[in-house]
Image 1 (cartoon, rainbow, N blue to C red):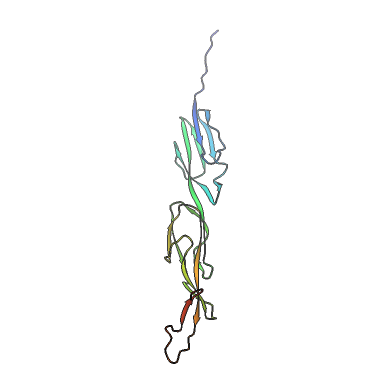
Image 2 (spheres, rainbow, N blue to C red):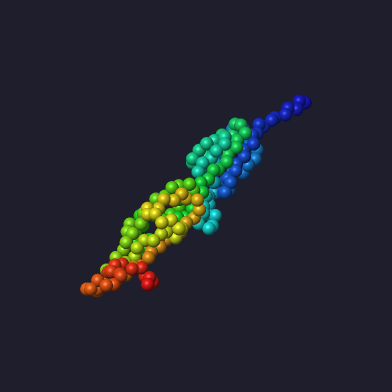
Length: 182
């Protein structure tokens, strides 16, 4: 009687989803196995207005698709890469803002435009743009996304004060005056 050993060739497949679990576990797979690998989530909420969005698979296969099909014919390593996104919101209060709130990739440069820097209420009262709540004074505001942001335009209220001084003896004249000024 002859005894023969029958060998099965296997290769190690390592799958690292990083922020999300993959549908295929790392381990040994018989040669020529067809694997369809995907992530259970392509968007992972991290809380605090931060999330991770699937970007690509890297390693033995490079693909921007969250689903890859591979034939196991050698050791395989797949690592999911992710983009970090932050929620950005801007409020103009008295004026529209040329900006859409939403999720933006870390490192993105945004331009935020307050449409009106002076808003006249028509009753001898107006709001004049002062600065943004993050301390910046320029309009339009340009920022690089590094964290979640909720920015509000800050305003100064001014009143039109009419001075009647036919003799021109008063040291002040009709003008806009800041609310609370003496």
